[in-house]
Image 1 (tube, helix red, strand yellow):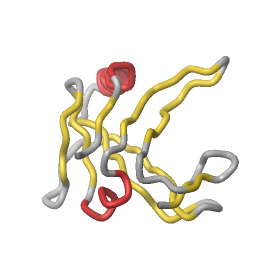
Image 2 (cartoon, helix red, strand yellow):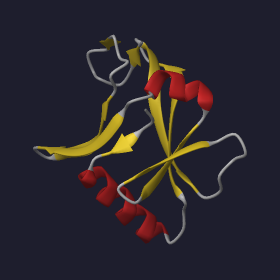
Image 3 (spheres, helix red, strand yellow):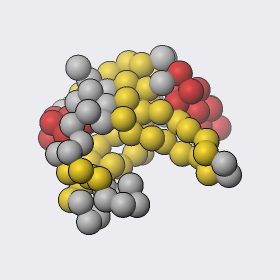
Length: 107
């Protein structure tokens, strides 16, 4: 399956990469955190690692590691604006429960 971006998220990432002036793409992973057990982590990738898995979506390369992919396979990353707030939204089909604040999840 892999990881995908919506068009809106891809445009947002491409804009950030242009402003930075460098970068191969975006890394999506998970870490142990929060009240539900796991949290997403996002960072720009300037150099791919040997064990990185990569996926192409709307012209953006997404990177992850095999351990994280087990939890986020099939995830679509969107960029949404709700009122004065904006940010990435993770549409992860593997999530069984999320904490009330939406910062962590479990599968």
